[in-house]
Length: 220
View 1 (tube, helix red, strand yellow):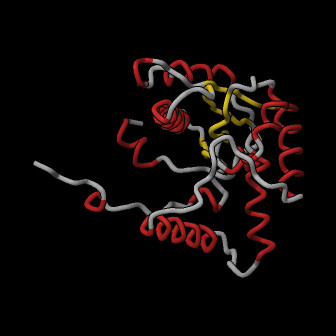
View 2 (view 1 turned 90 degrees about the horizontal axis):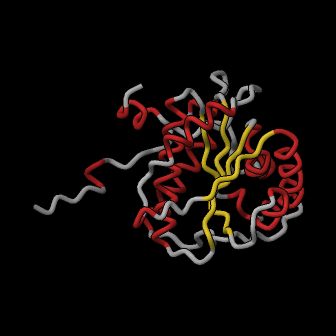
View 3 (view 1 turned 60 degrees about the vertical axis):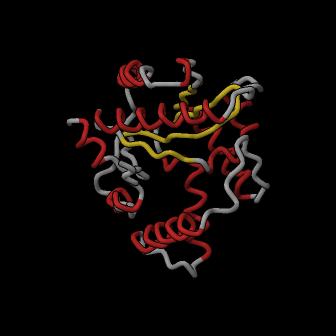
């Protein structure tokens, strides 16, 4: 798979085969992704890989907490207001994804079940949490985004699938406790990953994308 093919064909996967991901393969991926650029070469990312019983125990508590409607307290607050165009795009993609799965937006039970799937990592055999030291600035969050994008591309290039999940970070204190993450590390994102299930309908879903003409501004 060449670079442009990887960029064009990568998409978030939300259904996985019951097959473990080899540690050696993940180590190969991390070895490559560590070359990601960062402000002043600080390389601020901290990565926590979770599998097996540890993942199941974490998932169980996160799911129970979400089912009880405990208010979210993420380390990085979720957006509450979007510019109008972004709000419209997010809504259009949300409605398209529900329609693709045959979920009626009036069916609150199915929508809630879809929401709660996040907390079982879409049944992925592995998940990765990425974080930053609490003293760092938004520049380091930018660096972390570069790192995660490289990670997602590398997973895809190796035949794996990944799904970046912000919602799982709603309860960071639970995550830190289960994974023995120091209190100074703020949890930014979860990436669920594994071998994609080719028979799962949801894995065929593709989000609406902006046209290049809508975001590239030629100034010369």
